[in-house]
Image (cartoon, rainbow, N blue to C red):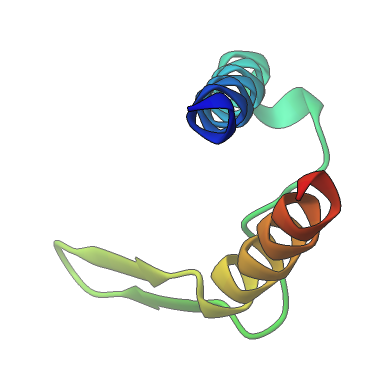
Length: 69
């Protein structure tokens, strides 16, 4: 049961961090503009695939979870 509480706290902190990043907008360094992220801009559409960003976030979250266990 104690592990579930830690997981919820970590998820909550991540949500707060993302909320702060979205609120501050362009004032922070760009997180989703890494090399390897794919952006396709058509006439009426824009498709954004943050592949490198998702791999980086996955590695960071994996390290945090391993450190807390």
